[in-house]
Amino acid sequence: MEKRLIEPHLGIVTINYLNWRDTVEMVKSLQKQDFQSFHLVIVDNHSGNGSFQKLSEFYSDNQQITLLETSENLGFAKANNLGIDFLKRNYDLFKI
Image 1 (cartoon, rainbow, N blue to C red):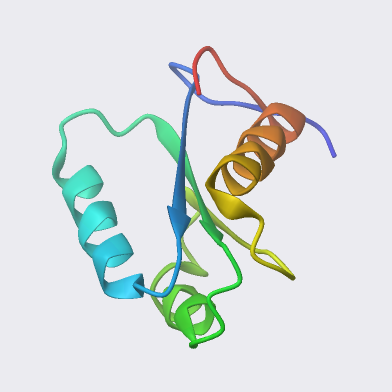
Image 2 (cartoon, rainbow, N blue to C red):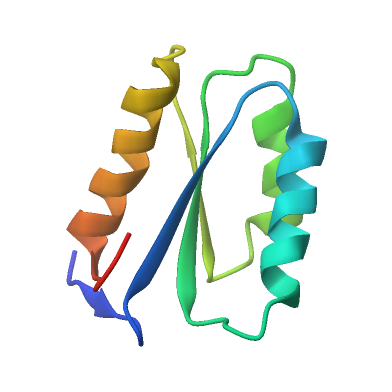
């Protein structure tokens, strides 16, 4: 996949586990900010309660957001690293 350049090169990673409603509220807060030149990766850490499906309903068509789902609970650090690795592989970013 060819890397895409985003100005000013900011990537954001958040982990969702069992509580998709809080994740939606966090995204709403980000969307209210003046600064909108970012790409957000939401990693659902194997919630198993339908969280990934709910988040997909909200964000599957949003080009600014990528949803990743793990096949097992990786813990916070590994799930965070999964999102960081995705951003590094797919975008030229100044900061993550």
